[in-house]
Each structure stands twice: as structure tokens, then as C-alpha cells.
Length: 157
Image (cartoon, rainbow, N blue to C red; front, side):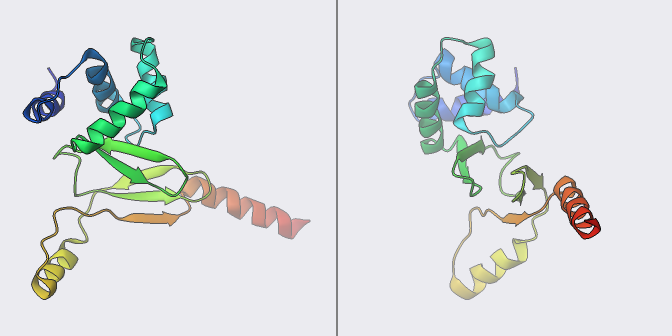
């Protein structure tokens, strides 16, 4: 079975919660999803395919529980919707988010450029960083092309 799922199952059991079929289905949706930043409605659509009896309210409750248990990270990309990603060691800490302000797409990049800053903070302020998030807002390549085309069209009018 999937090692990520096994690790997450162990975390649930360690915290004295049961891994119900519904909870496992929701966890599996995160593991299988191509898009790694899911809102509750995204999870609902994915889960409905395999478990049509799971309702949106159950998904919201489960996302809250999984966030509380540190299985998921809640992310705010400034679009008014909470998004979630797995909080597993293989996904955590060393990736950041590029957020397009035009189309809303989110891309990850893996480079811990903040490691030096964490060292400085630790030395100067005696503060031990356990995690960080970096969100960079701008325009994705597709939107840059569209904006350029719009500008050129406006000049030609």
C-alpha cells in the first residue's frame, strides 16, 4: 500500500482517532490528485466519483480535523477560498507557491532559499523556525502572453 497513506494512517492512530472509510477516501483523494492545492469543493468532486454518499459537510469537517491533526496544511492564496495540501515530510518545508493574480493558477517551486534567513533569525533572535511558507504573486507565462497580446491589440486600434 502507498507509504504516504500508511504514514498518515499512523498519525491518525497516534492521535487516538479512527480512520473511517470516509476519512481514508478523503486522504486518498489528496494523495491521488494531480492538483496539490485543493479546496473543499475540489475534494468533493474527486470523492464523489468513488464515494457518492460523502457530502460536502463531511468534507468540511474532515478537512478541519485533518488540519487540526497536522495531516493537512491550510493555505490562503488570497482568492477567498481555503486550500489544503498534504502535510507529509516529503511535501513539507522545501516548496513555495507561485500564484498568478490573473487566472489563479498555483505552481510550486522547490528550493529552500529561505534557509539562510532561518539561520540568521535563529542566531540574531534566538528563534527556531520549524516551517515557513513563501507565496509569490505575479503572472504565469500564459497570462503574460495574453496581456502582451491585449496590449499589442490596444496599440493597433
